[in-house]
Image (cartoon, rainbow, N blue to C red):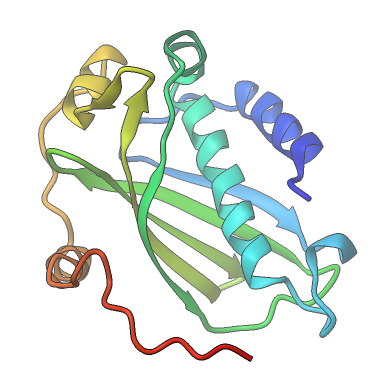
Length: 182
């Protein structure tokens, strides 16, 4: 089940934090609760994606975009993601999530998120998302302008740009192999 109460708590907590520049790094602190873990007693890979999402929302609150999002019925559909799961996050363990926006292009905003315990990175995610409302897509530069942020395009790090370029070579829709019924 989606952690609605935790989402509300994080957004309310974000309101009491200092403002954040669009390219600043947001840090949030969490604990791996029993309902977040799988049968092996570690943070579930699906829950990790949800916890990253909650951290992105909290960073958006700190950037001052929530009124605009609610009023304009803005949505941020995920358009691609690459995750590295490297270390277990056992039940009860405290960890921090670092969220930073890397840049944008004509269609998408790119972000980097990672989970840390001390100096050890537990996992990391690179993602891209679109900005949309009921009428359709909104160019990221227009959305940033509406929030009062500078709209200078920041060059994506090489590793992120390489992912964008490689993903552009994948066929869509994907080809389907033979289907075997049981």
